Amino acid sequence: MKVTITKLFIAALLVPIFICDCSNKIQNCYIGKVISLNKGDGCKNVLAITKSPENEDLVVDSSISFDPDLFQTNLDYGDLVSFSIISYENYKWISNTACLIPQYAGIIEPCSD
Image (cartoon, rainbow, N blue to C red; front, top):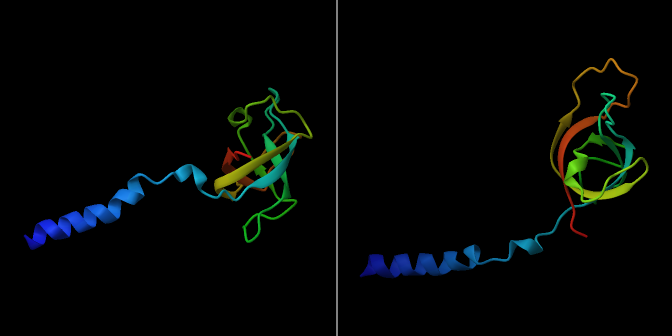
């Protein structure tokens, strides 16, 4: 009987976790300006960070690579986008083209503003 009551108690505690509306999760959104796009020339897709959330690692004027296909619209040079950073690392590859090189290679996702 004790085991059954304990199991019911644990299940009752876990139910709110499974029915939680996780769409209300707070995103730390950056604002970035498109400064480079790969238009078939071998250059990287690069965003320059123009606004950074408080207490985040990457600061204004940092640059990060990104996938423009994640955004609903066709991006062009100078466009501003809102995004959150899932992960990033220092950009380690060497480029032999006359292209802008990002400081960081990153995985980002658009923010839902």
